[in-house]
Image 1 (cartoon, each protein chain N blue to C red):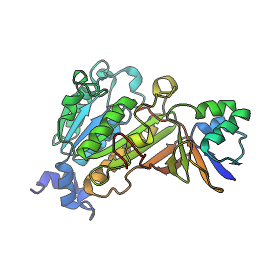
Image 2 (cartoon, each protein chain N blue to C red):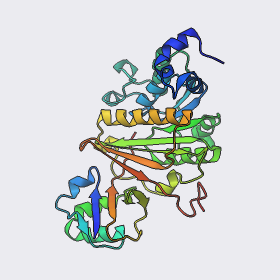
Image 3 (cartoon, helix red, strand yellow):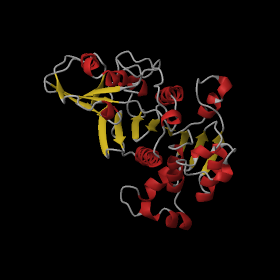
Image 4 (cartoon, chains in turn purple, brown):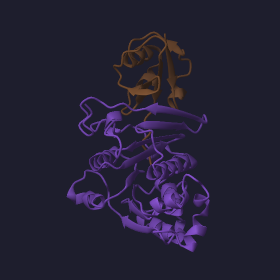
Length: 255
Length: 79
């Protein structure tokens, strides 16, 4: 398989780079990525991945677009209000890059039970899962799935001025996993974006970092399994941390 | 002595907190701070607050060595 003339033009800025080139672009074109959550993080993640030429994107989010989303969820317009986010996102991403195959699941990924559609969403063979959700139950379900399938998991979140990203390459590492950092039975904190607010571009920064991490992992340049990056947008400060395997973790079976 | 850092919005609750403290575990730091900084101690007791020692994520019972840097990071969960 090789690129056609249109693809040579479209992806020329990747092809100019020795460490991407045609072989790297073909890897991106052959990749299948699941994005869970099409809010403030999922919008930039899906836009950059579609533009980069990821071959297949599956989108999962049960919510419909609301007026209060438009301050930060850059895929949507006022005309989209009331429609499912995944349908609006799929339309916008297809307009951006018709080569990318987009699947839309307006399901909630939560308990993993048959009733919530999780099984159907997770049935495909993804190369990587991107967590753009706002709740711990979905995060833990994705973490478990990625550990079991030995695939990449790129998780991010944001609130107020702050962002967090942590990524795992389970294709090459067994542990630690997300549950080693925040165990499965942990309660949700009092503060969330709905009651405390969030600065839109902080989500943009973290989403862009997630998309970059996805591309790095697909191209084989990711070597920071379990590293967490924290961003304080008000102070303009980054802080990196390393997760450690927790003895007896019930998910990644750390020794 | 232990060097202590409060990341992000925790810094808003940590004004006036000394940058070093004598303690054996992060839990002990939180208990000591509760005396003079109850609002900060309450924030530190929220679920999903992360603690690191020399940039390694640890539990609240981690034994600390003299000169360690302990950072406290508030929960970030939205998307």
